Image (cartoon, rainbow, N blue to C red; front, top):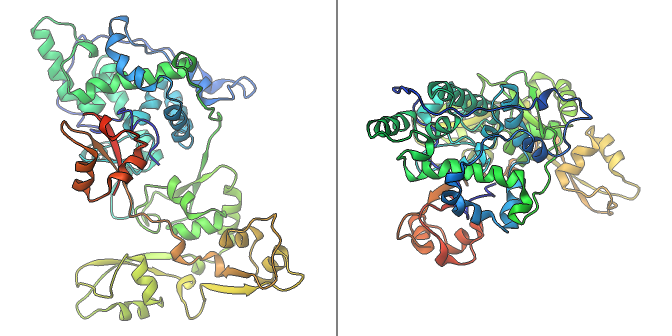
Length: 490
């Protein structure tokens, strides 16, 4: 999912620091004016999301800093590939961060920060442990109300983390007396460090703008990266590129659920591929939502009605529930599988077990509910197409929807069925678990250090140099540079 600034070295890694123990006085204020896009009539609203942003951008690079920011401008100039990735990475979540910033009366530049933090990748994790599109550190996430447990991580939840990040930035803005650049710098490196730099400049009778402070290299680059991106959005032609359009409409809807819900079952109920459910709901760490909440899912716009209709048609017994089972002395997988009426092979697959060896005191996930009771309710049937069959009569025969049959078998609706073709049918929206997308691979953001080579980095993380090149679209391996951020799938 990482797409934009990796090869250009434009990602921040440090995430947020603690919001306590600092004071500020007389820091330079930046006046922000917001165009009230939120209240425009539908016919007046821009069709393109970039145009909507363009109308509200207000923070600029001072004339005396144009030369200092030229490096970041050059990395985007005539780089159509990188610009294409900018639009692609913003397609899912940019509308939401922008809308929330507007609703809260905040500058739209804040809505763009996830481009610099993570390229809007909710699974992104820095080497320092910052996570999610807003790159919250665990302590800061907790401080700003982001729940985190075995089931769920609010730092990866796009809705929850956006609320926390905008609240944190608002807090920093107030503490730094209305200076948004100082607030954003403090978001990146921590308010204590920014305040220390301000006090040092005051003692030396120096200006206390962001541009004049002695801050870590990453923070010194953080604001220029964002503002150069804003320049690109304002005038793509000046960068000799085209900025691919993003429709000015929501990508997802928030749908309430009655309690814990199996994510694979949710995908089937919504008529979606599992990847879509996981991409939109990255906050859930396991196979299901957190039993204690939040009790909502994000679904693509347009599928919520089907999802709710299908969900309401199920009996409570048809819903898959999940338990955390603590292995007891004397347990083995066969006993546990028998107790929960599930195949041993499936239990091993769920928990990523390479063998049937288990250890007392460890925990595993076990599903319960009639959908998993293999003897009473088989999980898969195979139907052989005969003459005269159609998707319609097959779906009626097994009391499932045509959409389900298409989804389960990856069919093209325009291609006729063939006699003797095998069609998989699953019971009550339960799909075999081997179709679940792998959640083992995670994106690690690695900052290139002085002396690093692609080969050295590959050896350090036990991956291949070729993979690093492909993941980051690096043509010349000799041209990586300190501070550049590379995407590693680990």
